[in-house]
Image (cartoon, rainbow, N blue to C red; front, side, top):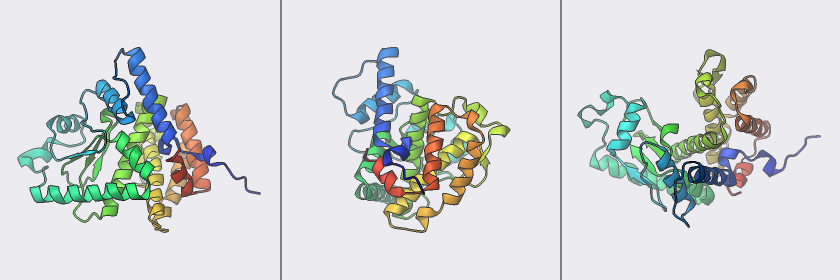
Length: 292
């Protein structure tokens, strides 16, 4: 007889509303008590989050309470991506990284439509994304679609490709949101106690999405991202794409399970929950967790 698990037993932390809010609250309390950072009272959860991370980070990420900024040029953020190696100086020569005025309007419209699509599909997913994302920085880089980095929480860099549909934009937004959520969970709960160890030969794990060996923490991220992407297509009633990563996800999680020593307590918990999910994939559970 198959034992059925309650929804609460398989709620993935990085896709659970209450866990995201708890992490923000813990971060806020740490800054107030340990770093003597005084925050105004009665702020929204997004304001508490960005006031806190902008205090902790060396480059503040612009944000507003009710929407996510879309910008095509921000010198401070661009310089930070450059220093982190996410972009190269050669990408910036002759301003080739900046889209034309017409391209900017086209991208802005498509990104706003994608964000609205997510809101229609799942209002609480939209709310969670809006909480953790302050700014989309749009700039060109050949062969890259964008990215997020733990050093600059709240920032998503996107480089939309010319053939992207609105759904492709939505997938990119959901993809990067999950990175943001896992970065926050790792910051608060130490999912990967030593990131350098995760990059050693011993710790390499097959990435669910790229299908190649990568550092364990990056493959762990990709496993989480794959669940979010499949969930998006589940909400769009695309039965094929809603299952596209399941086999690869199983492989990744099996490999990570053999390398548990690289995970902290929250990493072990999340691994266990992802393994339960892949054993009995039910995307209604993800929809539920984003509401609770």
